[in-house]
Image (tube, rainbow, N blue to C red):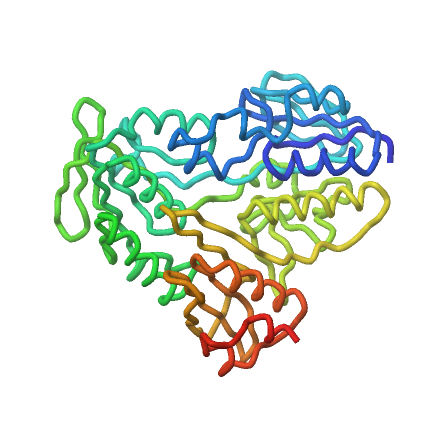
Length: 405
């Protein structure tokens, strides 16, 4: 294929696709379209080291700006695709300009869920965290002594709490479910992470929702919680999940569900259109999943690059994730969907612990808290299909490496 590849979205997956194609010596014309005004960059550090002032933005970019011109990758910034015409194989931007494609890649990512205006979601001082603009706006709010309310006890909320406490803010976090991390981790992992945050002064209120935000002069000033409590706040961070950006796909008639439906090669229902990253709903075991992680975005995009370059290969997800909170590194290998048993193992050094997930007696995932050895070993077990002996795994005196044989 020598026709133009148009990549809609200039994030992790979009960049990984373009970079891998060039690394494979593929010379087709590539145009990448991004809504932001900056070249592609890493997002995870935005809400951590960048917000803390420990990393400048230029260290977040994947490549220097001149890399794109030198590698014949056209990047159109501060614009977005309004419509896809599959019959004519064109995309139309919001300014009315058009662009022809032979192959189209949708790497449109996802958008954070927001609060409805009826409960104060449109007040000033209410934020989500997704891109550089969000992080820059938040940086002005993150001052010692200010009062922050975080809505949502998932990884985004907990990471925001860690940054805010490090900077000296008073932090209250509320979670509607009966515990934090209810949708993504076991009770054991949640208990460990809750203790870490409470020890550092975060007020965590579980089984507690938001009734409304209270404003003054359009600025958030307080929050009424579901238990009737009213707390004063200076600003709010909303971390209640994301929705896949699949509108373009749906509007042009592609198959969508909770994301853009793709096959094992990341092809959509139109063979000339691929989708990857957060927006893609891909095959997993007997069903489908969306994987919201850097690892998935990169691996899936590189698999697509190989396919486009003539070496078609199915993408077989091997999920891994991480979350940095204070001096704690939580590393996750596998996907714990449907687990029916967990095992907690103490690590070889103080503060190290891991939680191992099983389904029908088979290992499916591991959470490692400050325990790199457990993470690396668990990841190898999952990749090679090794199912560890449960009694030996539970014994902290067992050398994990011996369980790999």
